[in-house]
Length: 283
Image (cartoon, rainbow, N blue to C red; front, side):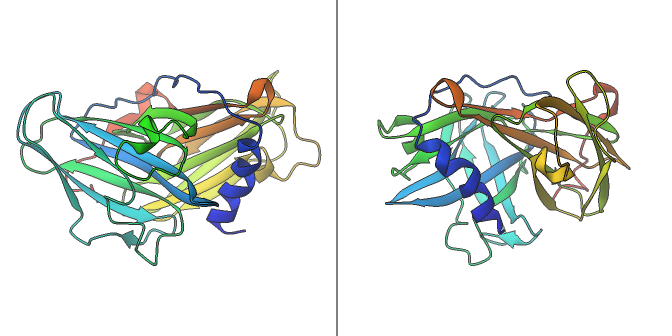
């Protein structure tokens, strides 16, 4: 199943239930920084409606902030303009709304609907904020997802600025819904992730799952389906161990009960293992 079908299969059916807006849960890694990873989604659902992302960049530290945004698909291929797209923030407090369209990836034949971007303030190193909102809408203008009365499935999270050199985890999943884990390796060096599934009592479930992340790679897993267990636990958690610095990511959890609820949060990283990427290692 391709990425587009994978996302659509897990989410399109949930849309039919009618969805409630859920406040974002706090990101587990430092977010305001001059280099940040940003999730990118743009999948057609039919009838002119897209499951997509909206990105708000804000200069909270100083003026003359230029954020250069370079994007990749899930196969580590560069998409959009080779030089990236510059988001210009000329004054402290100024914001700029961006979408996959304004980031010039939707017309790239290598973009299949899922990817990630790296925003880098190349001019001054001033930190900036970015919040990404995901949802379904027919209004693809900047800010349309946030302001259109027809938008649904809205959840938000910040960009991530730290990667892990060792331990992280998915704190909770439930088989009554759909949990998607998005792993990003922004480094050019490949990394190996080892994932162990646990039930709610902390008992390991099956053997560990090993995933190879090539350089500048994005990997998406359906939890707990990816572990291939015949009888997965009703709920539980996942411990993640890396063989070196270079991964971060997000979790999207869709719950069909209560009218449908969505949680979009960062994968939890151990504070002792987190580190900022150096400018030399950035995409």
